[in-house]
Image (cartoon, rainbow, N blue to C red; front, side):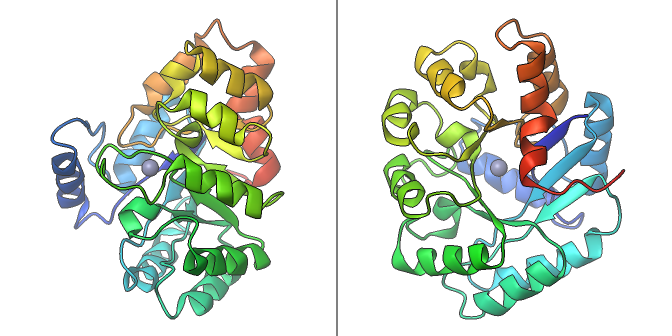
Length: 270
Ligand SMILES: [Zn+2]
């Protein structure tokens, strides 16, 4: 069993434009490995031997949460191999009712990307939304740290996430990119005594060779989950990196590929 905890797809009609815009924002530093549609993701999963993907959405402005929810409603029954996370914007005055509807639909979590969404991750408004989501037993999935496409933003800094982990201790929190790309030594100091889940997207290569990253992994072996951020990373390459790795033993590979995330989310039978 392999579960990719971090993927994105876009409605067919806008996928091409969405991909082009994001690549443009990174000045070409990013490649797309699929066209970003539902069918593209399914094909990629089949090629990589991935059973289930968690599809993360982001409401980049306060008006988008409702529309994303409508789209998820259309997509959610197409395949048991996709698990959708919803998104709300902290500045959306209707965020409480959207969270309620998300919960009623059986959605298990919310994705936040404070840089894309333009709010400080540890602000008062954001905390209210996290509280409401946690009251509804939803998982909080965060982009954490520097983002290639928004290098100037400090809204998702790892220092802010250190505050969140302290203030929401014991909550169901996943940090993408193992907490932050390329800031391993600081992350080790800031996060290591607090428990949250870390995904491997964008950092898997470094995780196996960087001394600070390896130390973070060793302290959190039961909390690392497989995520690719497809279409921005190649699912098959990531699966092969783990399968062929001499750094992880077989039990550690199983924990990363599905056992750890299975403790956190309900897996539908495929
Ligand atoms: Zn992502």
